[in-house]
Length: 370
Image (tube, rainbow, N blue to C red; front, side, top):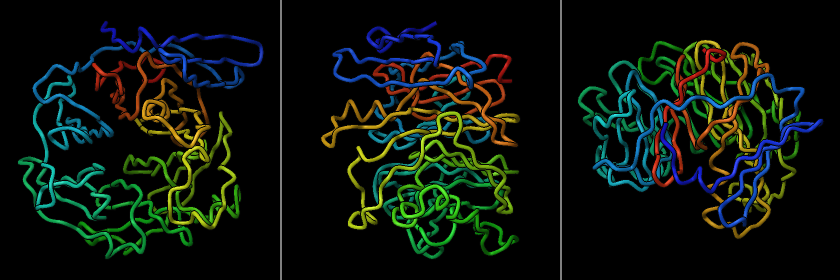
């Protein structure tokens, strides 16, 4: 088993009391403590997952500031926001097998930030957020093919997106229509557009807030090609849709963190002070049985947030597990290394670490999760 420096100065104290379990993670200078409360009535399983592999930052193509990990086929794609190469490629044993693209504004080059969406047939799709366009690559050769301009599809910029077969599903900044939209832009065989839910899902929770601030739609999205799953970042709400657009479930348990009380019209369309928002679900994953979210349960209390404190809300050791068909909460588990993003297979969890030495880690699932 590999130990890293962060585990030396990050103290993990599990205090079991009558009302619940409290996990304290304190920084080395004691300037910051983040607290998680998990109700014992909801915790059915609490255990440390065995760590099987870890990628040390000692390779030639080392990662500097990884932000996203995406599994496409048998290859892990890692977006490194500060790396020499925008995207590093790894096999399932965490061996580096190549790179994708370069920084720049020409064909096949990326402007930060980007989002690796997925693949359709032999095409890899990457979203460039500042350009609001898709960059298409040959998945075998990694050669650039062409662009797709999303402004032709959307009135507002895309917040995040995923693929379900040939369907491109986008959560955008529109606060008047639907929660998400699906477009058949790769083969043209499906309907022109599918609407996923409407904003009444949010209106029922916070009628004024949801209509005024598109940032409350921020979160993570994933599809298993049968259903679509969304975990909001500003509340503990998770949503499940059929690919046809039917709302299957919505659930705020076990944390029951509501959308923030924010409706200042002066901030519409812009980023309000970060301490006005909680940060809850920072990543979502799915396998053949379960839905997984990384939960931080963190809310900043100062406007002048230092960089190291910002990283604290971008990583967590809390993994919540749900039934993927009903959305019912099942149990939580504690990861031995904090993660900021993850992908899930039937027998493993791959994640990005903000540790200075370990950047990508693989956790072997216990039998309960398989």
